[in-house]
Picture 1: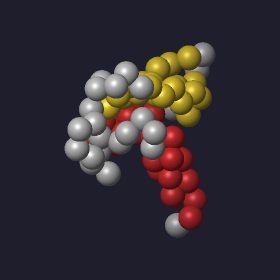
Picture 2: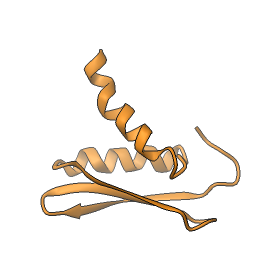
Picture 3: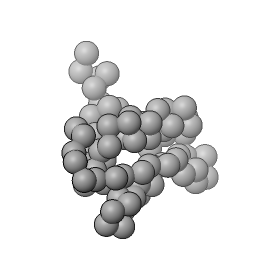
Length: 75
């Protein structure tokens, strides 16, 4: 997943008992806000950690989160 030249940063945002993720590409200023992922903060913090660790672009963040959340359903 790691791409050269990109520098995304993701953080958890809490909003009315639901947690989401805000991500910003530091080199271009592009951003993404994924609302209401889960009411469990641990889950959302783990997802943000995965996005940050793998330097997932803001364009692919939603797909990666969806894959992480749906993957256990197919096992």
